[in-house]
Image (cartoon, rainbow over all chains, first blue to last red; front, side, top):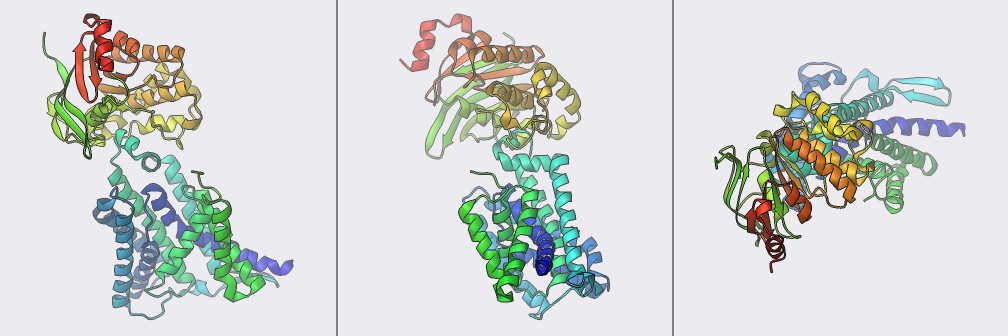
Length: 288
Length: 238
């Protein structure tokens, strides 16, 4: 029993990171009704922006958030406003194809600019750990991931509940026509929503870069993580996204514990398949 | 008669892809009056309201509000001009509370400063909405939802309200009460356009009536001048 505590702890902490990876995808899928296939690559763009900033000003990666978050907000706003908004309402395929194209462009641009070398956002935090007992240590970086992830989710929840724009975004996602009748310029709102989703991707990118190594082509593997979180947790719920992340993290780490490290990813996917079979809308999702 | 028409629709034609829904519709609405647009299902009444409010674009024809051409405007721009639509089926935001549904009605910059005053008026008109402020919109009864939809339309501080089939699915006593409130709203000076299938009630409420059939206006006039026979023939296309 005791030896389960470590994987459970790691799974929960990692789950916080997974949640903040998934929340941006969840937002755009729920609000703009668009599956952003470039989400993972945009997140890794955040990681590389942080890397670049660190190269210029030698600071702790967390400090680079000051630069990366606004930069990613702007990038998200522009992408939605000038690219994706143009193909909304024209069917399912055009937005998907455009996002996919964006993904390819991003990966190859990053490859050109940064080379295929393995990268990491190095800080002293990445290797520290806190020993709680002789069978339980807390990797500091995982703890930071969890705390920041929880913070981001909480902030977003407050934003959607308490602000005019947050309510307008929720209204537009419920009923676009009715929202327009309230005087809401929905295309404009979608651009802001994408900007906000990208700020969460920026945070996720920096955290991922601090926790794991990354390459220009790492994006898609985190897109899958994001998908997992969204499917398990359900669309349209901040709490759902957070719980989805935790469950995915737990599934992976417990699977690795019982079956071996090679089974980590598989265990996550098995839980995903189970949720899809038993409750396709996700744990906190609306039943359609 | 002095022409103080605030809303003028001239030769309006609207298509849904290849299907023509409205044919050369011309309608005038005078300031502070109640105009009823009556017709059976599929006559094009909702299409007309949706086009005026900017959800649909005309293929041909002119819509003027206070002399300004508004046919090309999108829905959120029309709201900014002072036109509010109470949509068919209410289209409340199900995951927002009653209060949030009302507040979002004041989203337009022009309306936002007047939000508190508008909210006070809506609560005065529909006290039940104050009681149910924190409930989710989709937990209200049919009549309460209709009141919320009307209240929400009032929040943008409109000068013209378009009511699309507000009596649909409601019990007669509740309809009577809601029409009383519509009358009160009109008496405050807000011009009203009522779209209804219920002939008797909407003729009673109106200063001017238009009967539509298959996308065309087939009869118009002040309700007292229209005979029951003429209305019936126009409504059913006999």
